Amino acid sequence: MEDENSLIAQRREKLEALQAQDANPFGRAFEPSGTIAEVREKFAEGTTLRAAGRITAHRDMGKSHFVDLRDSTGRIQVYIHAKEVGPETIELFKLVDLGDFMGVEGDCFLTKTGEPTLKVHKLELLGKSLRPLPEKWHGLQDVEARYRQRYLDLVTNEHSRAIFEKRITIMREIRRFMEARGFLEVETPMLQAVPGGAAAEPFRTHHKALGLELYLRIAPELYLKRLLVGGFNKVFELNRNFRNEGISRKHNPEFTMLEAYWAYADFEKIADLVEEMICHLAETLEGGAPATPEGDRLRRSSALQIQHKDTEGNVTRTLNLTRPWRRARYRDLIREVDPEWFDYTSEKRRQRCSELGVEINPRMADYEVTQQVFEKLVEEKTFDPLFVTHCPKELVPLAKQNAEDDSLVDVYELIINGQEISPGYSELNDPTVQRQRLLEQAGEETQKLDEEFLLALEHGMPSAGGFGVGIDRLVMLLTGAESIRDVILFPLLKPKR
Image (cartoon, rainbow, N blue to C red; front, side):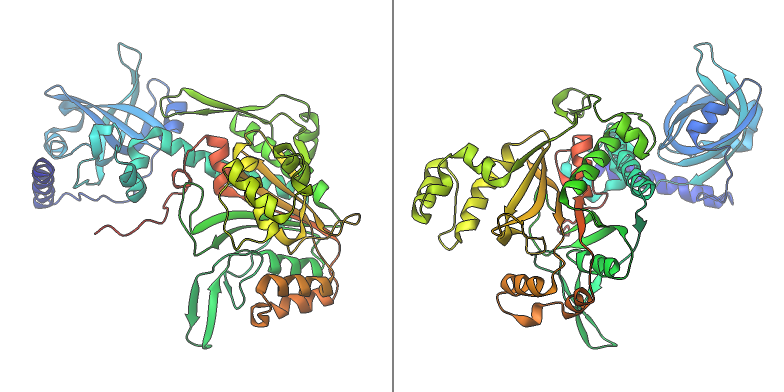
């Protein structure tokens, strides 16, 4: 800490020296010839170009200096000599530190080793760094510091920056994919009078002007379905949801979802769509073709694998996304764990849980006991894509009952890498049945019912399929990130004391 304080003191002394010379240490507008990657593309010996970035290396050779400038797209070397910039500029340059931002204008030339370099004849300081960057560009070693000071993580950790660049690509390609298939992007309220669309604990807030108790949304579902009633046949929203629940490797209280609804479709068509979309995203990250329906059909039978790598680039696991993906009924998967499960009494099932090493709560309903077995012995052990279909109706109160077995609903749950990536339903559009299901979910607490949603349903909603995709988990899947915090720029953290 003493060394760091000493370095900070030295940088502040340089700041004061710059200000004493009427130099502007925090710069002004500067127009480069593009990003550093674009500058390198435009590079041609004898051409004059302008570049701006953070100083990441400085080799002092007396009257001449070699400096590396870096931005998020790459690095370029610049050459500064007193004869080219003049003694006054060199004196100012001596007050520059690693981590400062600088803009230069110079002529392109190749060094003896063939390194593209700009011979500087003008330079400007664009931002003074008063604190040294961590570990001399070797990155933050403390995991919590990486999350708390993400800006330093992005500056010093190329692996981390690459994950977020991939996340940006994924978000952009989702929009392209959905729009190419006729879906309209919409926005629905984050503040809701009745939280609905999922079973979760909401965050509460208060609106002073209207004197209303409100909730941050836990899901956009009930508003998106209102749009189906209103005549929009294909809608989607990339939305932020909030759930006042625990934090884990797979959970953050604020998270991003893709949710979409398709009039006249069912859960099987939705499963096809989601399978196409995720494969398209995986191929795009590997430099694949644009998001067109034709392109997806042409690539349907092609082999597709995603390699999960550690920070050193070593392959840890290989995810097989080759289509078509496996589909299996919920009960059949439970029978793979125990062929006689559904022949047992409730008492025997609880005994079997103990034998299988599955922890249960004595207050759990019978379907919850079965679900616990599913989560621990099917979901957590599934790596390659699996659509789990025809789940018990108690698990999904907003889905349509199966025509052949009314104890089941027409749904899928997409499991990849031991976690749910996407649920999809044939949507329930019978207002009477929907009211009863919501009452059962609310435990007869009628004040928890969204009467406005039920009123909309009574005006008629077409049969439809719908789905959600957890974007954060999807990014984890496609990048091999180990924790949800590795794919959220600013995850929720307990304040530092």
